[in-house]
Length: 272
Image 1 (cartoon, rainbow, N blue to C red):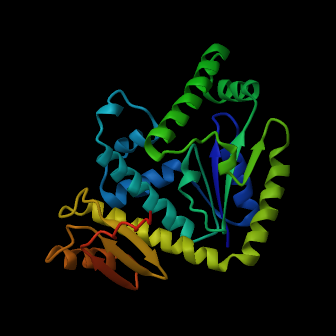
Image 2: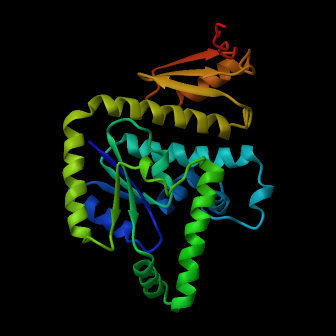
Image 3: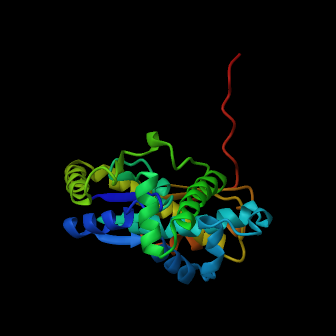
């Protein structure tokens, strides 16, 4: 039971590697469009609205922070639900950053030399070399800027990943064998890690359900989960909203209990 989440540079063949690994492991293979399609259906959102997460639109800066967080919450909910079902390979430009550090998942960065990526993009998109160079540079810059603005992470930081692979230097088949071997090792020893991943998934689903509910909207409700018990904390969770919040949370499959508090946790006391 392992999860592989791949962030790829444009033209690095990350999706090809992901498919190859999924085939060899017998895992499900998911891409960004799969997650957006499901999130659109589950939360009744036009797929175009999710472009704020993946593509900088002309009115990007006019979007409220609350709306951006709401859309990201929907994507996180769907993606983590699939990851909690285990045996999945996901490929995107920045989605690997949504996989929590639980010990049962592998975050991978797939890169390539600029020259090889330009050649690949020119061939795949049937454009000239000059246009391909601009496409690669612009895409690299945009992905990094979006991730920093929306998720608060640097997709180019190698320290975040468990493995960084350069497909310009080594064959996809060799990397697929390596990832298969690592996934097998994770399968052997991380049952507890999947418990943490399932809790993270439940918390994400409850949070998204609250944000999608017309009575809660963008209310700032802190959501935590441990061993299937969901804890909701927010000043607004007084009667009758506390019972409504419990009802929303209990609709998520896998939630065992729901605890609600209308008090924010006290600030820790710091001695002089």
